[in-house]
Length: 115
Length: 115
Image 1 (cartoon, chains in turn cyan, green):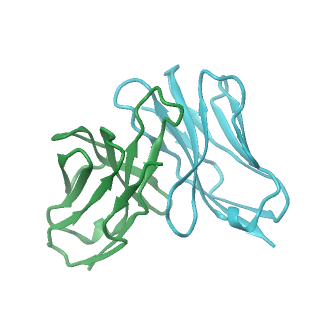
Image 2: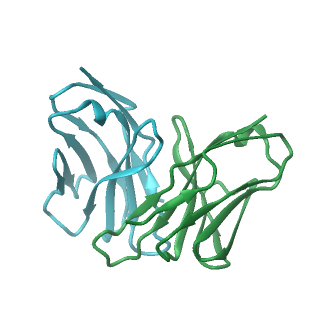
């Protein structure tokens, strides 16, 4: 079964600094997607960034970028110029395109942004 | 954008009650999902549905059932609520494969307390 591991239950960063959240996954599939979701205190799960396994280029969305290392099965999220509004739970998630295509989540990393 | 609406933000129910959690999506998606979120455990899949009247068990289906009579509505049912079902429940809808915006959209969650 596919698994997603986030080894950092909590992280903190100073406002305007850069922070990297780690994620590793285990799969034998070749066609899959990886996601980072943000869940602020409002509880709404918001998609931050999406990476397709076949694409070698790392995805970027404004201040958010990923380091996708397919051979190492690693998918870290870098947040640049951190803002107070970035404080939230961050979940790494995996979905295989074959079969039922269920989204599998890591246990999350709580990010605190200090002013 | 896809909108996923969960009818209740907070619910308090008594042990033994039959509880219905409702979820509606507005994009004619075939695939819908119910997750349970607990601190330190991340999100765990309870049930999912890939079409009207079609359902499959997820990782933790015990004590739950689901109903999908119409494509836009996916209901989670707690047949006899117990205190260990106190949790946050998240509904999601999945964009079909092959689209540039492939992925899940989540509702804002229902926090259920069973007393």
